[in-house]
Structure formats: structure tokens, C-alpha cells
Image 1 (cartoon, helix red, strand yellow):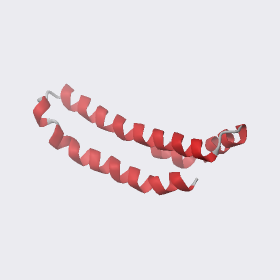
Image 2 (cartoon, one colour):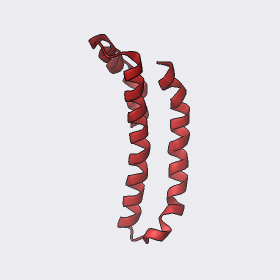
Image 3 (cartoon, rainbow, N blue to C red):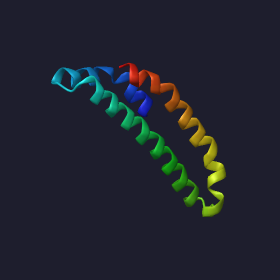
Length: 84
């Protein structure tokens, strides 16, 4: 969802720039949204595993692919966030 906001929300960020928010602040906002999305994905996965009854000790292994995927998406978006 964060990728959709960053990718399709360019008009939103342009409007924020027109209001007077500088490019550095917009880049920080986009970075914060991206970081929040990665953290939120991990949290949701952790909570889903807890609801399924997976013991705390065994939740990290199934979370690993999701965290790696979220970090890969963040790594791909990072240059685009810095360029804008």
C-alpha cells in the first residue's frame, strides 16, 4: 500500500510542494512512510502468527521472507525517494 501511495501519489506530493513544503521535507516524509510500511508489515505478520497460535520463539523464522521482501521493496524505492 505504501508503494501505491508513493507511486501514484505524486500529485499529492506535488501539491504539498506547492503549499511550501521543501523537497527535503517531502523526501523525509516519503522515507518515513516507507519505513512505517516496513515496520507495519512486520507487525501485522507477527500478530497474524500469534493469532494462529505460533509460539513466540518460533515466529521469527516464518517472518523472515516477509521482512526480506519488505526490505527489498524499500531498497528499490529508496533511490526514487531521494531523487524527488
